[in-house]
Length: 69
Image: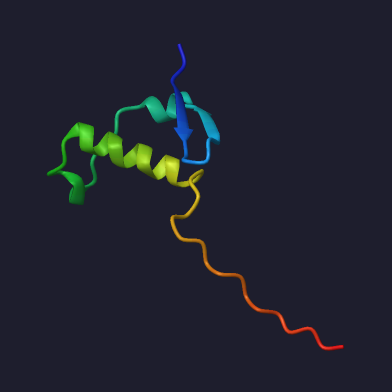
């Protein structure tokens, strides 16, 4: 049994991620996260994982390069 995530974007590209067994382990809250529910901790964990494959919402403009002849 494997857990597979599909990440879709508006341009139609699909990222497929297969979760490793280590990611299926229950999250233990840190001292600062004791007020969060288990569902909130799972969402934070998956958001962090997906941030590695998502494109940034705003791309920085390319730097202008001056070419001298």
